[in-house]
Length: 219
Picture 1 (tube, rainbow, N blue to C red):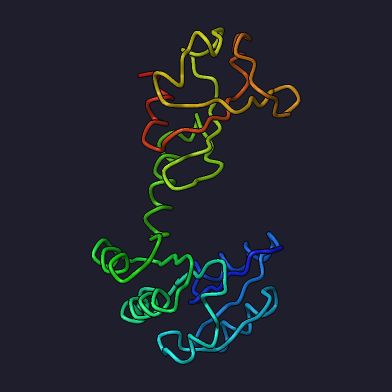
Picture 2 (cartoon, rainbow, N blue to C red):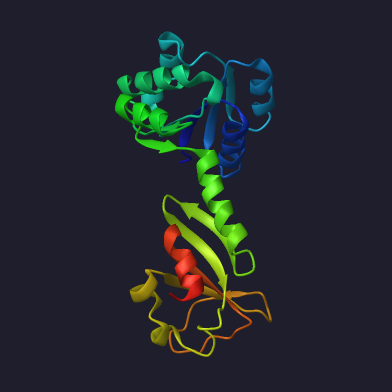
């Protein structure tokens, strides 16, 4: 059964999230006070409604307690509304609330009023892009889940010719190799811990974000 998710706020982040979740077959109910944004979202979400989500009566009509999750993605210009909306969602028994924060103070307030998870899209993107920029010749950031990066890294000089057993990447860098991308075919294969690494291949590793630069440098 597909997950039922409400997205409140259809700015750039909310709209992108609504589209992606819909593409992944979630049942998305999109909400925004601006008719134009709701009409745009209605072309790909399950349902789209023009609504002020800081109004308790209107918000209750969405039955948030019966949804799998609600994302309060209200933008920078409506901080007060995002706080009110988050607090109301918690009072209504919403099982999982993700709220967008603009800064640390906003994040603390949202946590205090009931958000289960806080996200700052601009900050997260900035952190990810900084690593991609600094190490653009060595890595490609494939995915991010909280502090965990799934990253594709070129075989570094200190790795070439050695096996994963010899490198001890989990012990030294907390990095788990989940696959190899072969340069010749481009195919991803499962890691062989006893096979020497080829300098033309790449590693796909799971590791905490702050350890990726150390993994690339080898120290």
